[in-house]
Image 1 (cartoon, rainbow, N blue to C red):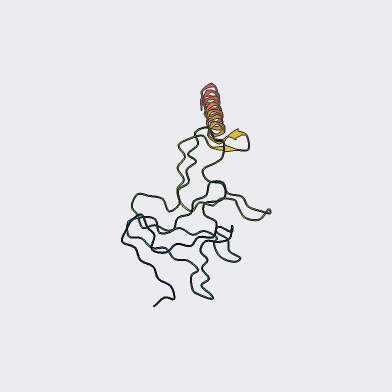
Image 2 (image 1 turned 90 degrees about the vertical axis):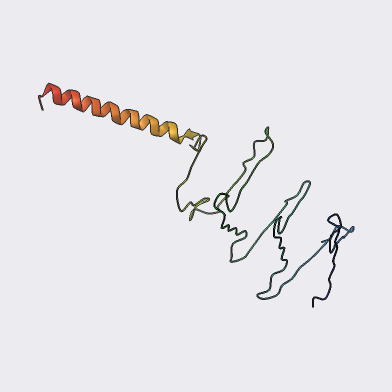
Length: 152
């Protein structure tokens, strides 16, 4: 039996509430060793949710493990989805930054699908590839003309 329990049958009233008007943590969980600090479980809704008006909605940090880990067994949804819902905003939906020169800010093991523009620095990669393909086709045509001239 847990040290503290709470129960509510009203969907508008939480089973347990932690409130700290003195600007400290509302709820704190410390699992020690192999225990989890906080666990949230739901059969049809969000297991754990974080909301903030101006700060980070959900923050994860780890010294030696993944700061955020996501898995799904769904046939049609992503394990991680990022959405910037401000149509006038310039911030990315997903951002990665890697300190140092070793390793990568992003790594994809599998196919990658891009529906918009793909850039590196200020260059449009897909446009650059199209230009290279045009150059290759032009060289092929030049080779074919030379072969015809030389009767090869």
